[in-house]
Amino acid sequence: MRRMWVMLIQAACIGAMAAGSVHAEGTWPGVDDPARARVNYMLNCQGCHGAEGLGTADGSVPVMKDFVGLFLLLPQGREFLVRVPGSANAALTDQRLAEVLNWMLPQISRAQIPADFVPYSAAEVAHLRARPLADVNAERDRLLGQLDRVLARTNSADPG
Image (cartoon, rainbow, N blue to C red; front, side):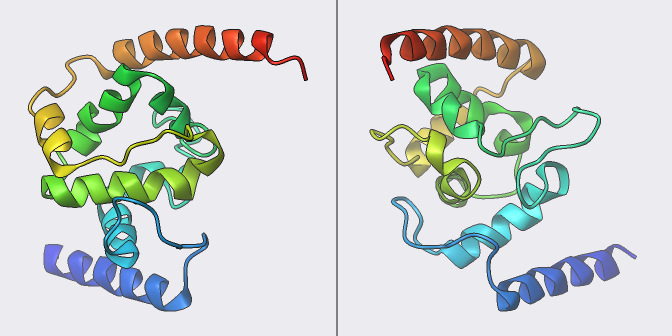
């Protein structure tokens, strides 16, 4: 039965690749192979986060669409994206996880990525994966509070 599911998932991925991406897949730093990164997102992330990063209707998986890039405004937010269980425990090498993150961010949250974004590296991912989060919800809430303050300062400094 498991073999059948794996074959169905692989067929769906190949079919989706043949049909083309919903997003433009141009080049992006830290992504050696956009098609591979896309398939790895589909196999390791899309099951919970959805193809477009919309999360779940009940909120148990938060929306990433047009938002997740904001975490990059905070050093701990950047770390958070690697340390969450889905990333930290993904069946991907550190290099492949870095590539998926570097691919996913502009696909799902391009407008929110800071201009000075530095792509994730395999070494950074390996270091952060070694310290997975114990309480994801508490850390996310803490970071969201910090983001609120950063965005409030940014908005108050912007006259237009």
